[in-house]
Every structure is written in structure tokens, then in C-alpha cells.
Image 1: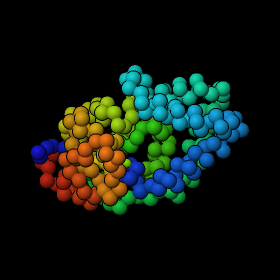
Image 2: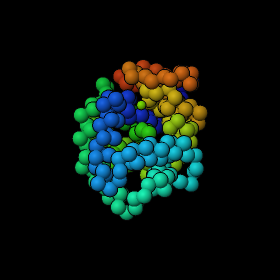
Image 3: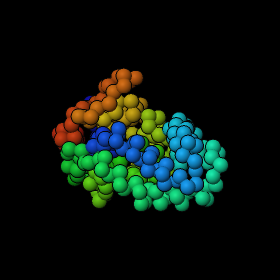
Length: 241
Ligand SMILES: [Mg+2]
């Protein structure tokens, strides 16, 4: 089916950003744990962080942002006052998080794909798992050398009410853009996380080479290829007027 696409949504990790998750996550957790160590015992902090992250990803309460779900769960489980820890979190993401750049580099073809989408008159969106504060997501966008591009919307834990793989996450993006889901093309590398965009009517492009498929959902995107193929796919669609 040939359709009119007015917005292109890009996943970040494994799609626009080539990230070594096996290096990134242990380093991230170790640095964060060290950062808060004077205030929270390390053996309580990490398990609570993981529990609250799981709660945030699972939540389907439309009245709460991901940040609200996370913080409520997190501080209910720890004996440390929120006023004490929050400034520390802010300082961590501002001052320490950037050191994690060593685990990431721009994915091949990432910048040209986004520039091509923008140049064709479409809006571009960063549709990354909204489990981080905006500071951290903008920093990671910088690691992909894309921080200067005029994205119409970037999903963060402050501005979203759902996480991937819930279809409501994708519906939320279309809502923010004020356009029908059918006019959106989701570009991502993860079958289970990115293809549920189909469930709300979006078109999908499964982007290699770092495709992740755990087998819980059939890999049936509308398109597949590497980022360099995106211009051909979009080029074959009706031009926007
Ligand atoms: Mg990904």
C-alpha cells in the first residue's frame, strides 16, 4: 500500500545510535551508584531503581507521566527524602552521564536518513524508549551527532504517559504531532519494541543491521532495510504538497 507519510519516527538505540549496551549499562549503573553512594546504600539503590523502571514500563495509567510513575514508586521504596536525591540525579545526568559517550557512536547513515526525511518536507521525531530524563536523551542524541537537527518532538520520561512496547506510546506521539497515526512511519531495529506502532495504524520500517527479534511477535514490517534505503522508500511515496 502506498500512503502519504507526513512524519518519520526514529528509534535511537540500535537505529540512529550504535551503542554497546553490554558496556553502557554496567558502566551507567556503576557511575550512578557511586554518585548517590553518600546518601543511599548501594545495595538498596540499584534494586529499587530496577523495580521502579519496571513499574514505569508496565504502567498503563494515562493520567500519570512516566516520570510520575517512576518517582512515586522509587521514593516509596527508599528511606531517602526526594528533596535530597533529586538535585543529585540532576547533577548526575548533567555532569557524569556525558562520560558514557565512549560506549556509543553514530549509526551508519543516521544523519543522512534524518536529513533526507526533513528535506522531503516531513517532520522527524525521536521515538526512543521514554525512560530517561530529557537531559539524558538530548545527551544521547548528541552522541549520534543529531542534537542540532530540528526534530518536531523527542519522547522523554517527562512528556510521555506510556513506554514501548505499549501501542499507547505510539498513539501518544501522533497525538503530540496532531496528525493521524496512518501518516506516521516508525523506523526502528526492534521487532517487539518498534513494530507495535502498527497496532495503532502507523507504517513501519525495520532498520538493520542491528535487528533485534526475540520471537514474541512476527517480524512483518511494511518495509525493511538499512537506513540508506529509507530515502528510496520515502521517495516512492506520494510527495507532500
Ligand atoms: Mg532500538
